Length: 394
Image (cartoon, rainbow, N blue to C red; front, side):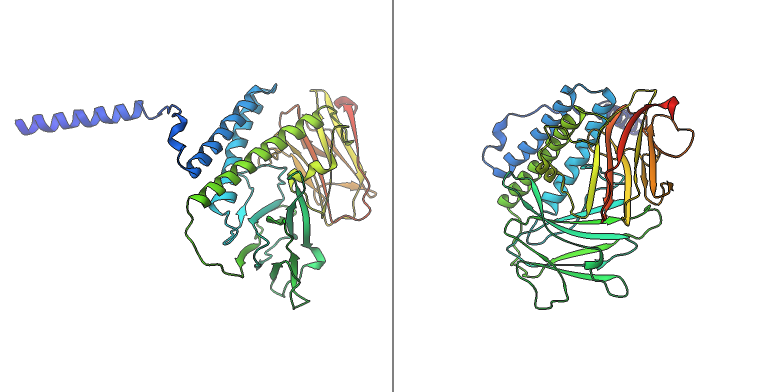
């Protein structure tokens, strides 16, 4: 009898513990006083990263935007925090660099493209590096180095792509990164400058379904003595992640503020500074056109232009956080192989509903956002035009 009572009591306690845990599964944490981090640079850097995320979210909710855009903003911040920590902390060693897959269906920022794959790695001009791999099915593979302008924005310092990039018959490649030219003059080479801090690899496809992406590896040829990361390294990585996070958020807000003042136009606003593009890691291989769009329910935008002499070109839509729209469920991007042309010209309609005929970009229910056009490796391209019309007049 005592054994039965004991077992019953145990079951009651177990059930109570389960119910208490279920009811209290969402634990609310109060912010502790700042003193816990006072004696540690790494702890202080962690606090600053957390404060940056909090400040960015507050900034989003203070903006005069629709609630749905605020929710998108929180998704954006989560994705941006993820890549900031991976790129600058987890894989941020310049002595032992590793490539970070910037974007994908799970992570979007800085004007990503549905047809592109982006990888980055941190560099230092103090070392020599070798990048190797196989191009896979990539129709374009480009390697670009970035340095810093005086204001801290990025500048392209060296680029290797297209016909200048050498492969063997199997699609394998090797690229040397160094300050001085290699003895083998036929080798692929990118020159490091005193301010070089990053390499970015871009892959483009006319649709990525079923395609094998390039594989990439990077090695430090100078093989420095390995030292396990300590407090200084952790603090530096967290501080770098915070800087990248804040700069990228600032860039999205600044670009929107500038372009939204003059919607439905490709002409840059008077407040635009050409150097501003350095925030967004531009490539010398792409020619960009774009701007802010705003459409009422009964309006449409017509984009018209000459078909560029370019192996790849595309027209796509983004939200205010510079994220490509939901291309899995809506037709929000078209590349040159998808766009129907006529006598060397193209016409694309952007609207809330499908037009009677022709190429169409679906706004996915959004009244406003960013329009982006890329011409890659183009020759003598013509600037496209943009017209706002009534949908019934199409």
